[in-house]
Length: 266
Image (cartoon, rainbow, N blue to C red):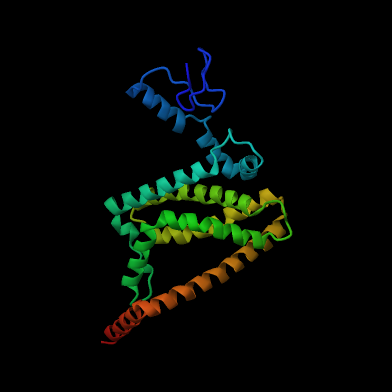
């Protein structure tokens, strides 16, 4: 008998391959064993997915440092966890677009005359949400590298692992909450504003436990991180405005604002 994954020869009563770790499957696929596999994967309390989700809240340093230090079986690895987060993010956007489109309306949070631009901007971000999620990770890791200068516990690649877990955890929670609240007419833009402090607090909590910092030190490091992030966002905003100026979008916004002001005077 050979392993169906790596073709290594196995002894007859093997349950797992001693080379790749793949489970030996002897029975044909049926609805019953397919459901059992699904249940064991997602609803068994003692599986890696639920354990990873819970421990990232309770003791994130165990999950993250465990993976960095070579403990790869107890928890879901960061790439797979991030892949799950991207999948759920795409699913909730699909659900909102299909059943609760009003929850995706950002026009109420735009300045007067910029409603159409805000709508296009939100639509663009939602369409490429997965790409933005992937781009955030190396940027956050770079900022953290600057923020925690002097503390050489993690290198840049290891900080990417930290933010893969952090971003995934938040995205998974957000996906469920946004869909549930959309049923009650809550807009996604409002929830994003509410989630922002939670995101900051969760990041501070995670790094406090990873670096074993005091309360005062993590506050200072968090403020430094936000300051560097703010500078980065200002630079990005300036670049976007320059692009908009040359593409004519800026002129359209200015004209729309003028029209809104004239309409308000009448």
